[in-house]
Image (cartoon, rainbow, N blue to C red; front, side):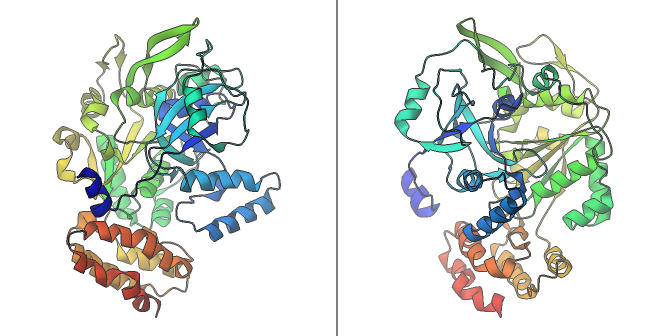
Amino acid sequence: MFSHWLGAIRRFVFRPVRYWRMVVDDEPGLWAEWREGQVVALGWDELGDVSGLGRAEFEQRRDSLIAQFPERTKAGAQAVWRFARHLGEGDRVLVVDRTGLILGLGTVAGDYYYVPEFELGHRRPVVWDDLTPRQGAPGPRQPLAEIDRARFVRAAQAPVVAAPVSPSTPAPPGGVAEARAAYGAPPARPQPAFDLAACAAATGLDEGLLARWVQAIERKGQAILYGPPGTGKTYVALRLAQHLAGGGDGFVEVVQFHPAYTYEDFVQGIRPQAQAGGLAYTMAPGRFVEFCRQAAGRSGRCVLVIDEINRANLAQVFGELMYLLEYREASVVLAGDATRFAIPANVRILGTMNTADRSLALVDHALRRRFAFLALYPDLDLLRRYHARQATGFDVEPLAVLLARINAAIGDRNYALGITYFLRPDLAAHLAEIWQTEIEPYLEEIFFDQPEQMEPFRWEAVAEELLR
């Protein structure tokens, strides 16, 4: 019955598990970032977000960059394409260093996403299944390669090695903060100023509204941007974070929650470490504790952006941090440890929440009291302003009218169809593809028990209206 529901009603496509080998670079602390952040990542950041690109547009972007940077190769860009398009949730990942030493085995836990203005911005969340270093063998040097199941199984059963990491990929077991300290990270440089006017110009939102939001963030210390898909929640959160950290020595980091994310990942927990030919189980800090340790050495605002915060079990992930979120001046003893912990005064937390996944009413009441909630719903005037400002030549009014009609048919603003799908200067060239591959699947899910409601909004029914 469950499989029938997935296939027939939810349009879930069953696919075989694929196996991938990724090479982590030898930059000090990089493997610690992957391990503690529960991500795998690739470079070629100049490509930008490739999730909405067709093959032709991707190749055009790739060739333009290779012309600017001759040392770049098509093979490197192809790895990004495969990373974004071919990896799937449930696929298995084998991570090795440049000598072939096996560092970890994990399972892909979510979709591709891109973090702008960060190194290795092409990312996927993973759940680490085994972080025991094991003997490996030299193999392909490319950052991403598909392997067969037999090779993955051999890696999982390879002999354990004593060293926690190889010399070519140093990553102290304490994590990100310790890695930066141990390897002499350069002193913090002031972030470029990013005032509210610049933030308003970048997001298209009213400067007065942004000022009220910033005031709420400063008052509470943390906020969640919520709304239906396609309203730019993550983008706006990153721009707000850029504003908050701008002009000081603070920093911005991004973490994505998922259903398997735990207290041990976020706060602290016992993790196995290779020691003297065996395994030792030690208390290791999670992502937030390390973030706070680094923030404690700065005077500027340090902002943690938690993307899709509602996908995790928040009461379990935050634990006793619930108390500290409300009483910022206090400290508590963390579970399993005798040391006290406090959130530094310069730390701010911004979450994003997709209301199509989970209603705000279902969020734990204790958590709701501790966050300011900032609503982002589809703004058709913003869509109009974007195309006017960009001088795209696309007549956006029929699209705006159609979106209003669709959202009226949906009848629930928490599931409304957003506008970010259509915020691109070359919309006319890609509108049919966007509608058929992104809009129709979303509407089919909304109207799955009312198929007659869906028919007027299929591409064949609206194409003439939109392209006249």
